[in-house]
Image (cartoon, rainbow, N blue to C red):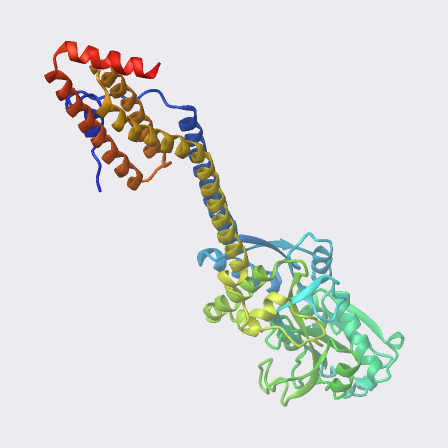
Length: 485
């Protein structure tokens, strides 16, 4: 039922529809109600703002520092390419390369907490806080002997065809890293060759070809991907007119892998390093090790899972323009893996990556429960504040009903006018209660009926009094006054 407030005011004003009783100043209860409403609204806005802020911080791009080196290496080029690809794809994870002197320095940066990710060699000491995210590439050890040089008047040295024959010879190692020297020592020890009985000489990668052409060593070792340009150039420099290098097979690769789990038995396919005849002419057994992308153990699982997903998605698009990206592989997620996989990477590989709702459903549920509880508490508190207002209005409504009977017995128009003024005050209070929500429309309807009855009683009684002589009105008033004494 739609109620006309103006009509209620007009009736209360004595029946003149143009006369409207203006509302009085707000009561203390009204001010308290408004404060409660503003506090409730502020609480809701604060909660919505907190949820929006949480969503923003959860979904904004995260920048991870990745340690990689040395300068101008294939690893640096791969990381730089991935970093640019992530930016162009507007990915959630971004990379900030930190260039180091090599895999050892990169591992130290991760161990010291200066980097979030790092590119490390699997055959070096792995930081305790490192967990695998991906295998960047597999590297093979290539051990070869250049063809003997033909020197007139000088007897050719015995040809080296097996690793056990390296004792007493000079062996050149391509690259300045100590890890390649350690790799050579592992191979020699497996074949019973004392590393102290060979002379090991290291050449920088950019000087290796020149050193090999100048016959600075009797045999050479290089470690890198099968398609490594550095290894291929070094082997090409070993080729002389009328002869090709002899590749030394590491037949004990399986035993080495068993004794040193960081290595794996592998093969160098025939023709991997080109040339005619093919170099090597047939498959050669060897050992391999991996370069890994590792993450700090404390890095959030969701962050690492997102990075892993982006890494393998981008890898597919980079294969054509950047072949090295094709060598990126998923990590070993077995519990007994030499380098344990990060839980985030394992979740992606095993198809158990959590969605946004999976990760935050508990927070969302508790947030909704808290919002519901706040609403219930607010409603109870508002109802508690309106309790006195409702009780007061109920008393006034009862007073209005009593005034109907009093109006029908009244013998004075002045008394009726006084009751009319009191009804105006009751009406004003009732309308304020309705606006504040203390009473509902049904209560206002009941009040409207009572007010109509009061107006009718006043109008009827005034009509009766107006028809009676003034002497009778005074006599009746005096009689009632005397009866009350």
